[in-house]
Picture 1 (cartoon, rainbow, N blue to C red):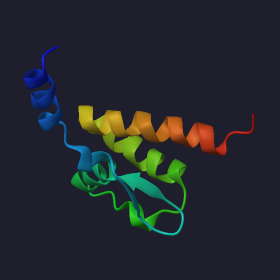
Picture 2: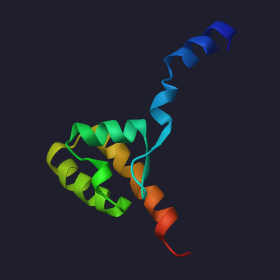
Picture 3: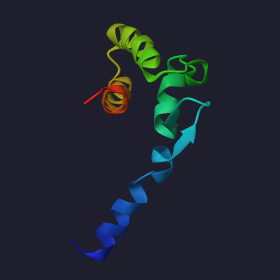
Length: 87
């Protein structure tokens, strides 16, 4: 791959969407996750556990089948598993 193609790919990536942000004292999410949740009127700052956000988002996803919301659900579910499951 030549340098111009690499530069073009790098310019297309929105790195800011993957930056994490502390939502409250309990939850940290990426800007992308926050934006998608808020698009569906889910305010993550009102929750203290990821599993509660996941529960609400799953109910909305079942009605909308929105791809972005599904991506966020997958990310949050995986993170919740690794952070909160005894191994």
